[in-house]
Image (tube, rainbow, N blue to C red):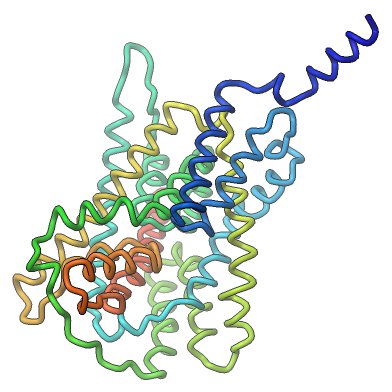
Length: 385
């Protein structure tokens, strides 16, 4: 009897005994994300840490993502405080070349147009909060929650985390997962929208070669951008400040060690910790809710609207400009750098093997980074007080 009791206690202490169907579902989801990252190579640097963090967080009885667990400690230190997004923006700045945007400033409009998805989805989230099933209100989104959901449309994970941690921290897990998942799925989500909204002739438009940009212009650009932001929209200053700091380090040409560190080791360490932390919010108890489903649906709507807005504005600009813009680069207005620009280039090459759009697409792409940070600053200034 003692042996049977001991065996029973051992069985009760195993994860298999405590495993719920919800945790099993989330493990399957995480394995699917791992498959996308490893087999399909959809942004493996993001998806693999996120998916593995999700697996760890759904192991019963381990408490890895609970209070005192190592993922919870990292999450509280880096995401709850908004520190990791600023670190990522420093690295993004050090890896970004604003030259294409400086050489062709009108492409900044395409980056601005993509932000329409943020505000359109904000309205949609508020509308969804009025949905009732009898006395039940499954999607109780207030204005702050709606703003946090809308920012997913910018396809900028760090900005989404930064804004949500200040406006709606209770939604941080679902929004972070949605934002980074859709960023990773850019090669799947964007092409059908781009092809639907453009003709064969438009996809084959060849753009004129960009003018050379001087080193002085590249050094002055981050400083001017920071000062404009500081005076006009101080709430966006942390994000813009981190971005411009990293870019200035790179463009100065006198701090190569710092630039390489930001671009490599610093970025890699932050990405690992951020990915695992975001994955820790894939816990079944937190993720399998109707509220999360609403966030995921609204997030992909926001992303789709942002993609379509950039393409449609490029088509509109062609009606008034002698120098034609290939509408495919409008989709790069979302700030998934450089994924969205690569997708624009890839689709362009499918229709003309000699039509290289990558550098042209980088203009709206980096403008989208700035645009999403500015949009977050506007929302913070209006709702964060």
